[in-house]
Image 1 (cartoon, rainbow, N blue to C red):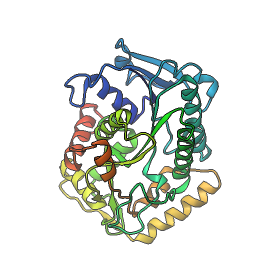
Image 2 (cartoon, helix red, strand yellow):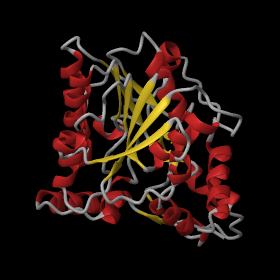
Image 3 (cartoon, rainbow, N blue to C red):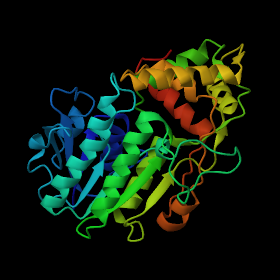
Image 4 (cartoon, helix red, strand yellow):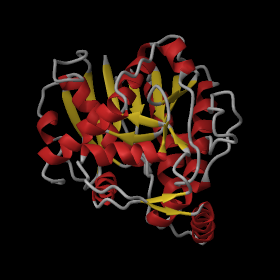
Amino acid sequence: MKVLLTGMPGWLSGRFLEVLIRGFNNEGPVNDWKIKCLVLNGGDTSSIDALSKIKRVEKITGDVTKIETLKAIAKDVDIVFHMAGVIHPKRVKQLFEVNTSGTENMLKVSLEAGVKRFVYISSNSTAGTNKFRHKLMTEKDVPNPYMNYGLSKYYAECIVKKFQETGKIETVILRPCWFYGPNQPSRQTKFFKMIKKGNPIIFGNGCNLRSMSYIDSTSQAMLLAAESEKANGQTYWIADAKPYSTYQIYKTIAELLEVKKFKPVYLPNFSSEIFLLADKMLQSAGRYITEIHVAGEMNKDIACSIEKAREELGYNPTVELKEGMNRSIEWCRKSGILI
């Protein structure tokens, strides 16, 4: 079996490669797949260079937004795990160039090469936010994309389904939520440091629910999606067993960081709505400011049910918030980015 991983060396793709080579707990390889890793031209590959020296791992360069750079990358490949994407761009148009057009380009070269299955990593943002706090979102809900990021991923989902309808390639769509776990990027570390100061901002009362996706659980779902016959043509929510309140997330991290005086600063709900309005205005002008976007969604309920993935994939996330965040913090400390 030969597989292709896009989006290297991103948070999920880099961790997924580690899982394939070393196992979930460094207990050994989970399979003997030959692995191609698609790396952006000029991108920093230092985090995967050691793994790419392993005989069954091949590093290739290309750009998903430029189909001419993708020739032959999917040759002899059985499964593509498409993880390349942009969450917080410099300009709004990047979202559609990478997330939408990039996905279409990868599907075109995969179909041409005779790839059997295409596993697409989508996002909770395609579905939007919960209409009612305790009514978890499911795969049956009508998509309601949140802002341009959600729209770019929703368009990509539509393209994936269009290729599925040809009957010439199998596809699976996974919708993970807020990632956490080892190999985290600077934006997550910045979040930890904010909590470590003891007075992080909470919009509203902190009771809004958020589904979280521990990164190794997401990797488990990807492996299941690649091999399950039932998964062909399906979409699955992928997250921890249950959602958590925003306060619970903050408090858990604070306890693990041994914050002695944890006193969040509570801002009224409408303040988050003001940021949302500002975000909409900026994005309508083609601009994107990460901090404003995040502030505009932090009072929202974004919580899903994983029952379909449990029943059809056998997905069974065993790591919950405290253990997963502890592993995240330990990774940060070993990496010297958090004291």
